[in-house]
Length: 558
Ligand code: NAP
Image (cartoon, rainbow, N blue to C red):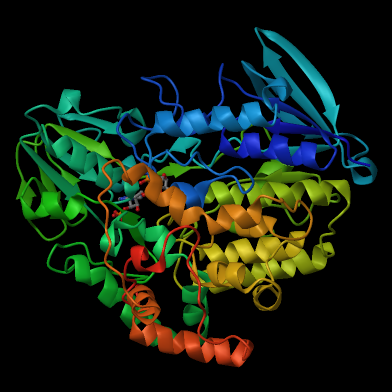
């Protein structure tokens, strides 16, 4: 019987894992090699991988909170690293998590015990202040992060090492723009880091060039009428449309929406492959391109002494600095080789968590996912499932079925031409969350909810699919979930209402609905409602504490 669980890393997923272990009556011990919690999100000047100084979350607070611990209502919707760290500290304090963490302790190796096939136990070797210790654990949760090692593809850029005289660095070394003052800078790769860094440097540099092999869609944090975009778009209603409407139509609608802000072809950013999946969040990049502060270029063919030659034959002279914003690779050097080999690709894991061929499901890797929504929320749900599997409350299918499912998934990705390293390629947030939630037994039953609690059901179906939806029923049910969902728009607006003007205008309910959904979307909703829940006619609701007319216009936003 699993009791003692080793958790490696005290970042967001490590904290959630400690909490989930406690919820299931397990005994967690978390090993953190630094002196504090927060992982990547704890900004440090140098020496370890952390976010850069100016980073702002790209999912909003309602969408990224731990499922039973909403952000304080006065926190901004998108926040910097110090606000997020403050939230982690509040979470750790609220659930008394710190006492389970051994700081400044490095995990050197995790090996199967000799009787692993019967016990599923692991030998965990750690080092604290030069003292090496080992202990036996019944299960291990790897929470050391997706971004363990910088990916620096020097081989792909002839001349960078032996010819180029300027300076080059990886984005993990980038902390702020101070050393780029007056320089001509080339940023390689348009992921979220590349976009953010290009924008920030462009404020002080003489010129910034942004080189991309494949292009990307760029979306803003802000939706129409100023609401957080992810709250408006990440809804079960949209998900239904995605699943029911023909994919070609959905793709057209989505691309039309992406190009409404700015035409990606005109700005040189239009993706060449997987056009519907590759996207980054950046509010300022289009404006920097429009103003010429950032110039988009194709991939670099080679570097000369002080210039870069691009694949279209153009040359940019006098390049002083090159920033490789080329992403990260994950690595688990502490795992014994037989296990590490399984983890070469995240797609080799059952539901991106469990290595299928292990005799006992006592090892889980958390956070190896790229979602169209919050990874933090996804990771917490993974932890809820993993701890229940450890405890024997949820069973995994037999190994042959796990392997077959993993193989099927890999085939599907190969067919789509997607490589393992394409981290801009995101899985559907709701699709993945619902899949894991079904395994845990916490996926909300929306149809049943329409019968039992129509007010809540409307918010669950048409409103943002927040993590709290997975606390409404089933194991880990939280009594505060209903109210948290019904008040989410209030918390989103609260930090904005710092100068309140009385608005006495009054709109009809019909107008409110048209405003929220747009006529075409409303028609689709009508069809869906008639199909699944004919008893439900035109609803007389307000979404949470915020009257519907305040919620803006989704314009069939997709
Ligand atoms: P990333 O998303 O993996 O993007 C790296 C980019 O580098 C690729 O998309 C590709 O862009 C380019 N690239 C990779 N290999 C290359 C090669 N061999 N040659 C040329 N170009 C290559 O990495 P990231 O932007 O550092 O982001 C890492 C993670 O952190 C992501 O999950 C991201 O969402 C997250 N992040 C979040 C925030 C935030 O919350 N605000 C900020 C930054 C990062 P091209 O196809 O354009 O060449």
